[in-house]
Image 1 (cartoon, rainbow, N blue to C red):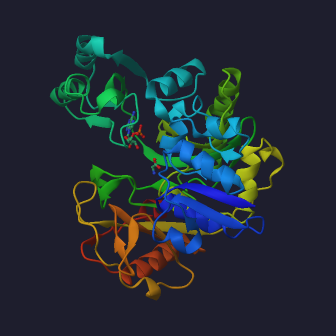
Image 2 (image 1 turned 45 degrees about the vertical axis):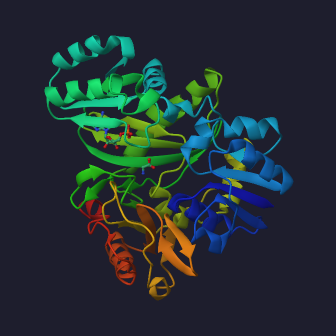
Length: 423
Ligand code: AMP
Ligand code: GLY
């Protein structure tokens, strides 16, 4: 069968790489892809959010399954469009993708179904004074979120009242996130360690991939600015068997039941962003797709056929899918361009990829081919993933591979996976 993967990052490269290993897959297309993906798939120059262009491509190229990597096409309704045209696609409908597309939708949903999360209030633009009064009534830190998608930047953690009041004005009056900030959520700050759990859902049933831990800050020791993610490892020992059981019982099952009962059954990957608080695991966020860079750690751990996993979710049969995960650890280190997540240079030649050990996989996130050479083309450039028997030695193998790669201004964190060693 021909398969189409939608997106152009490290996550999509990992999905393409794994799908290619399936005997059920004849050809993998990726739209739009990148230099690394073009080695494993045929890249087609259609933007990830051009949902009509993608549907037409799938129809004319006998695509039997489409797997959507990023949230934007999902929130735009790619799944609804494909299904109207009789095409099989992995991902939630537009209505179900609101779990990520609208923080207000998510918070109200969680509350209706008594799913553990931070306490919150929502405010619209005409309630700016009310929002400011709300801030005055609580102690810092404050967590202020735009309702809509803001390229991962719509969450402010404010340490002082002044900072919080300024943030409210920036969202509502200065419109720094445009319409995404027409409504805001102010919520309680949760203390604890974060982890991500991925439920692969078919509307009713689900299977769980290995829990993972991302490293969102740019600097070692979780310091500096928030990024898309600087590295990940899986399984994350902070999610013990007991915690995972609670996450299933208190979060995943009531979510699937609630979404179904409310008329938008959840199909696709439910990314559960968790905070391990003293009172147990609570929802920080849901995403309507797999994590990036967690996918680069989790995909290589899957032993069973990943085409069948995506296909069974898309067709409502995941209940009969038998998932097997390797009993290994996986560590993915992101190599970024110096300056990221702010301004950074591109077009730098990437050397040394051929020296990376054969059992380490390099997923490309922001690369392109220029004059026959692979050059940088993004903030996050590569995700280097090693697999091994213990976390410590796997971390060492991943870093050894990173050291054979070179480009001008390359930057990476040196402590990926370290948190998993102390548990
Ligand atoms: P979100 O986009 O909602 O995942 O938020 C981005 C990041 O902000 C999360 O990964 C957390 O590190 C942090 N965050 C969000 N909400 C909270 C909260 N209520 N308490 C503490 N940290 C939070
Ligand atoms: N790794 C964070 C995310 O995918 O949203």
